Image (cartoon, rainbow, N blue to C red; front, side, top):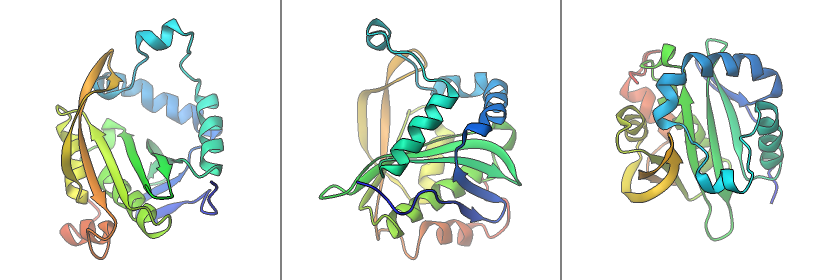
Length: 208
């Protein structure tokens, strides 16, 4: 499978989604360093099985190269999140499957310094609309630790609803963790999720 849609950049006001690139390394490292404690409870970690088999955490450059290859193959949308022209986070839409499934999942993180401005909410809405309108996917999901109330609020504001709980779903912060699965289906929200967010809060501050 390949997609004619990548690379793609999406813009809504001061919020911009554009392809993650190797020259983002310095900004990415700086934001991650400042947010180490803030992001630690939600960050994926290497389980013992991975270490025992010799797996190594990817470098930033190798992550970008692999993401670019997966994007060209139509399986991934690896976006950097920019706010007012500055790198502030990352959003990845992965596991893209067409055929009879037509689904994908969304993951994201944001710089604590700009949290509370609605950046992540709008970014998720933008990515959601792209997947439904351009890729014609049927189903999107977001898997979130139950304790991550801020991330759950993002999913709910965009219009995702709880489907259920997945036990020991991902290895996060040093252990296998349960996750709540939020889902949204194409056509479930009209006209689209970006319009829904803008109509709920028509100012630059989208509230979360």
